[in-house]
Length: 156
Ligand SMILES: [Zn+2]
Image (cartoon, rainbow, N blue to C red; front, side, top):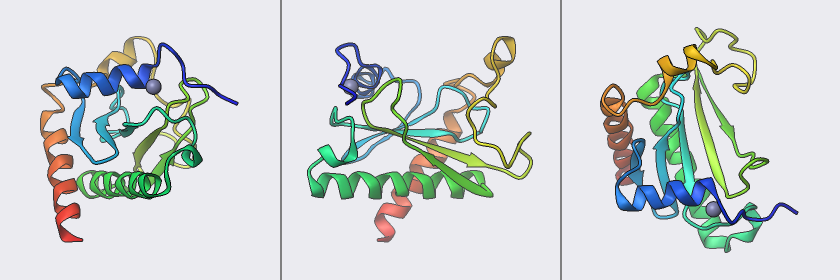
């Protein structure tokens, strides 16, 4: 059974969202923080960091779990709307960092390998720097996704 780590990267990022120092912060939701992913190779790639340090969905109380999944779906809808994605890929892995977090990847038919999973596709080395989250370049992307989330949440 995967245990929550003492030095947890997601807890660090949640703390950065709370103190305003997370460069990718899109919005605080009820159960988590929506942030842009570190790599924007898949432009609009976002993550929902769970506010609770649970490692499995079934550790969350039922109402919180349902709300967390609903908010993940809201983030995905917002990313799809803003990026006009062909398909959204949802990933909740946690093999390296077990603290619950959902990856939301917008996929386009113009992706280099549109039928393949995202993992292994994001560039490394010098190429990776080009796609690294950039607070200034990605500011409007963040605000567009934030606005789309607000619209989705008020439309219910
Ligand atoms: Zn954690």
